Image (cartoon, rainbow, N blue to C red; front, side, top):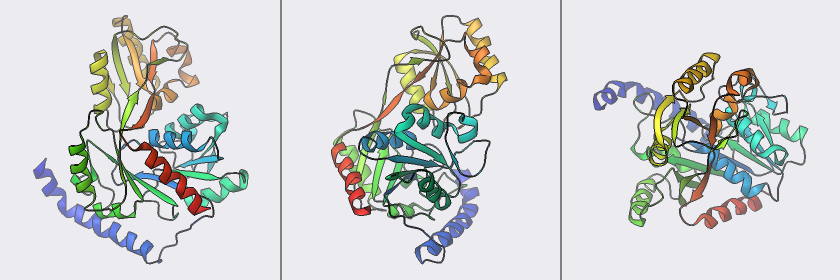
Length: 345
């Protein structure tokens, strides 16, 4: 792997020059950035791939939607449509993307869920359709600098922290590590529950080389599997994992600790399931009738599509709900978020 980094290093240098020039143009006002009159909270990362943005966005929805009219705005990665779109009853994961559709199914009328590649264009459209909107959550928007968030939340994966990573294509960084300085708060995600204070201090020290802002640590709390697609039995001890996420290792580790993991149907991130995939699952279950199929919430919204209904009705399908939990000082994070609303207002 070290040799590959060396071979790709010249391309990473070129990429850094391009991204550095882009960021300087925004910093110096040579490219336009818009600050809106309402609170806009950006949730993003420096790396390609999942750092837990979706569960943290859901955490913020639960925190804020009790007292505010909240809208989420995502790019809608993997959808088969283009342009601005507000999620409606007739939409699917194919029309708005798997993660926005997950927000829509989970929170319903409590939030408005919109997608659009051009965030600066999409926000006025949300306000035109829903002028009562009080807060907008920008999902995966750290590099979308055409909008200036009132609070910029930077996520970094405990297993792949940005300060140990390299720029594309030698590593997974979308921009230089110094881009962390734009963050107002940093959240280290997917941490082990039993994380020691000493390890937290070491990680904080590494992060503070790039950004001197509050740092928090979270872990994923897995809840009991929920049946879907017409299945109503309890999950069995033997399971096959079906996932299309960026980094399935933590999930796979949890499943292996709590179930007998027979097989992992491991697809790429945002995988668009086909009839051939469903037939593979059917064949596996016929050969292993005592096995349940366990998947993620993000994959569930696609496997539950009406086009597969006739073929999934007989499958023992379950999804695994997850929630973000702060290891400590979660109240301080909440206070930072709530105070940012007052400043923006």
